[in-house]
Structure formats: structure tokens, C-alpha cells
Image 1 (cartoon, rainbow, N blue to C red):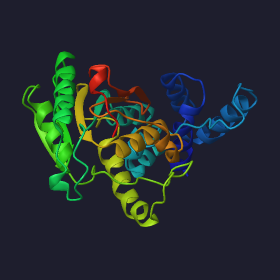
Image 2: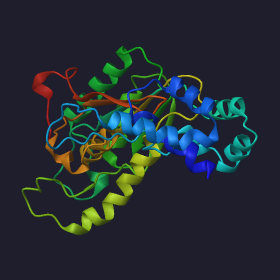
Image 3: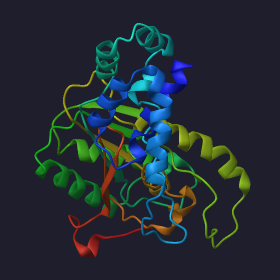
Image 4: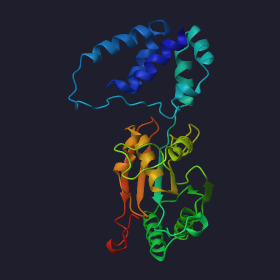
Length: 294
């Protein structure tokens, strides 16, 4: 019973305009027995508020979207044992041990323009312009003065070449190559494609691209001490899908955005699970006569 009593309000913590630490303090002070009733009381009070919203606005935000909320990482039996002993300090300390403190900053880079007249991936190399775009992007990242902790690249040729040219401009760091970030059809878009597309591609690509999102986009581990900065070199469809998933908006909206080759999309994931999309498709570092989308 205790598991439900303490878990319920901790998840609701995010949905009410209350200070987290204050609510946790109150939660501990009322004890395990009063937890559920307190949460219900809070819900009733806030339920009377009438915020100004658009008719179709989704007002919910799942702070445990990445399944890394502190309570999700703790064995419920440990919490139950502490509650049975009425160990309020022990509960607070245990939750604190699993609470992240660092922010992850992820720079998603779309590859440069590439040769599309071939079907084989190994022949779809960057054009001369695509190489220039990648260099400009590398210079932009270098000029930020950031020491990047890791570079993750799609295993497709155009992404590998773009990543290599970017790396030439940066300090040496760890490079990870993955098939998960390969280009594909992440989900049926709304409105639909203008041209006919087989449902097979979405059926097979969606699980992979969703897996890429879950693997690479999440809050920092609770053991991470400092903010981290990572570069992910991949593809327009993948990036647009990840932006939608990160903002918890309908992922079917991904095709409503357009990204230039070599553009930068920056997503920051805070310790409490809040996500800030700081830029989408930033391409001001590339001269206007060298901007392309296809």
C-alpha cells in the first residue's frame, strides 16, 4: 500500500505549481499513512483552477518520459521498509542519491548535401558543396568554445563523412557509430506525404528510430557530476522526429519542419526531466549561397 501512497504524489509533483522541495518536505512530514489523502487534497485544490488554454492544447507533461525519475530507479521494497520504520530522513536521503544534478546538451547535426543519383549508400557521398557545409558546421561548433564529450554518428556514408569533417575542427573525442540513427520514415506524418509511400518503411523504421530516441535522448545519469555536451550527426527525418518526441508534441508533426544541410538543432535535457529545444535547424553559420535542403 505504501508504494502507491508515496509514488502517487511524487509523480503528481510536476503537475501542480508547487515548489518540489517544499512538497517533498510536506509529504515526509505527514508520514506514509497520510500521503495518498494529501495528494488527493492537492489535486482537488488545483483542479478548481481555470488556466487559459487553446481548445486543443495538451496540458500534460510527463516528467518521467525517460523512466529516469529518482523514484523509478529505486526498489519499492527499500522505500516500503523505510516507511514502515517512519524513517523520513532515510527516504529523503535515498531519493537524493538517485537524483541527477547535471544537464545534457545535445547538438544534432544534419549531414551535408550528398550525391543522390545512386541508390547504393556507399556511393551516396557528399558533394563538394556538402563537404563545405560540413566544414562550416565544424567551425561553428569549434567557435562555441565547448569541449565535446562525445560524437555519435549514423552509419550511413553521408553522415560518416560529415562527422569526419566536423571532427577535423574539434578536439579529439570519443566517436560512436550506430545503425539506429540511419535515415528512415519515423512515423506516418500528418498531413500525409505528398507522394505515395509504402507502409512497410514506416512499419520497419519506426521501432528503430524510436529506439534511437530512447537510447540517446534522456536526462543525465545520477552519477554524472558535470554538464555534458554531445554532437549527434544524422539525418533530417530522425532529427525532426526526435524534436517532436523531446517536446512531447504529436510525433506525426515531424514533416512540418524543414532542416538545411549542416544545420544545428540543440536540445538540452535538465536534471528534473524538463526539456529545452534551444534551436531547430540553425544554419546562420553557412553562407546564404551555400544553403540547401535537398
